[in-house]
Image 1 (cartoon, rainbow, N blue to C red):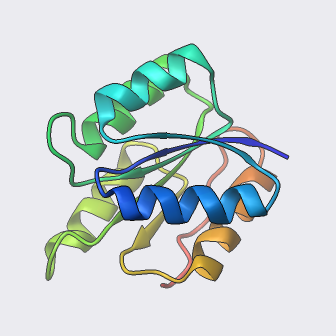
Image 2 (image 1 turned 90 degrees about the vertical axis):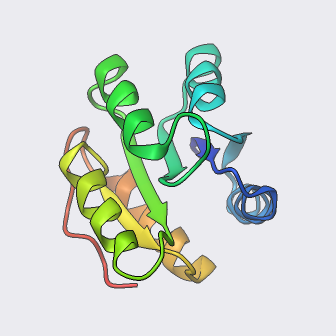
Length: 133
């Protein structure tokens, strides 16, 4: 299958996503913030990055911008629970900066896995509409 990098400061989400994606046959690397995610991507490039947006240190929008600069065709899914009203704003910004899909937290594993499969099936640089959560 595919190599996927998950970036999230919440260890329970990293564990849950790693287990679900590995069960789906993917090779998964995890990082707890944007800086560590960029280092992991440089060391062993993934085909898809799934990143949280609100994290300490290097947050998700900045991470997406740097990933885009380094790999313009990298496939990215952004996720956020950002609080009432703010989550949607962050997700809209993530789309503008290059995320192919955005997902509101909390989400079902089915929703995430569907987004992963759709994004991986798309041609590089292509991004369809964000599915409703």
